[in-house]
Image 1 (tube, rainbow, N blue to C red):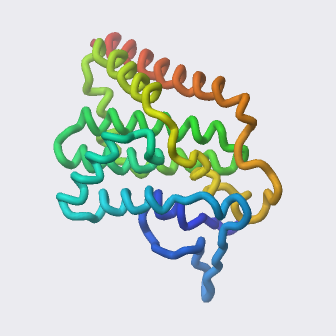
Image 2 (spheres, one colour):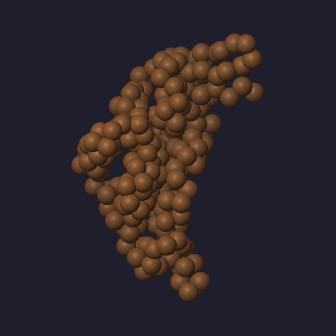
Image 3 (cartoon, rainbow, N blue to C red):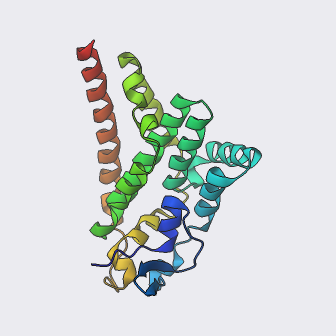
Length: 219
């Protein structure tokens, strides 16, 4: 099957194109797919601008975006936090980088859980795989007793920061974005969201508790 991706997600993942429509390169031809219906209302442009600046901007531009994102995290789509984590790691702040990585990954997983198109949920793994691998392993360098308090700081920010961004950004990764799910809801019913949020947070805390236990046993 052809591996089509919506350009908004392509840009969120790799900033590889500035096209206004999805593209895939086949021998001798290019296929373009434009979003329609509710998909056309998903605006990822602010996230794309921030990620582009963090990846290719001047030092001043990168610092400005990072400062704004830290000040108003509730306004930001999760992929931006992952790109900012790479930036902070390169700047010599591994703990700060890992903090924002965990925060962004957790929010992305919550958005995935709310996404009605199951085929779109795999976009989170692609995002995570694109982040600096050494930084993702930072938790293994932490003192075991520091891991759970660290996790609780991430959870507190998640509880304190609103969700003022369009959580449907991940829908652009799914096959329904290409007309296969016309008329279907983009998100699962809202009454399910509180339980999904709790499960996402519980899973994160549990994973950190297990890592702390594993590191203690090694020592």
